[in-house]
Length: 130
Image (cartoon, rainbow, N blue to C red):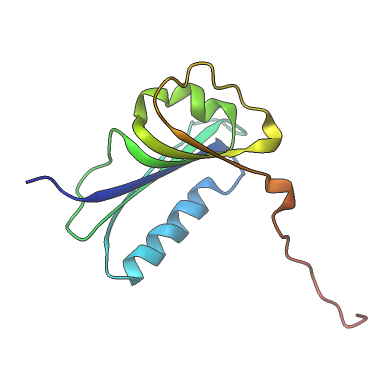
């Protein structure tokens, strides 16, 4: 019997909050009563490198990471280049529009969703003087 599993992967440079974003999504899904499996991949470098976190969510038990994913958040070009075989046909990919990513190798049928991270609202510290 095939399991109904939703799988999301976030990829980007070290320091962009890849693991934190994945853990936050996993926590939300767990609180909604879903079973969650998280998988993080990062190089053993002192600084920098490519990081990846996969979150698999299901009503039933999830026991291993997925080979392909339905949804991606690609914060850098390396996510597209390195993980091309893991893009499922018909997957959704959120990309950083500002980075001018190259999609020459992306031959699978995927929906690209450009997002301009620079316009994302930033938290502002409120002081007593305002």
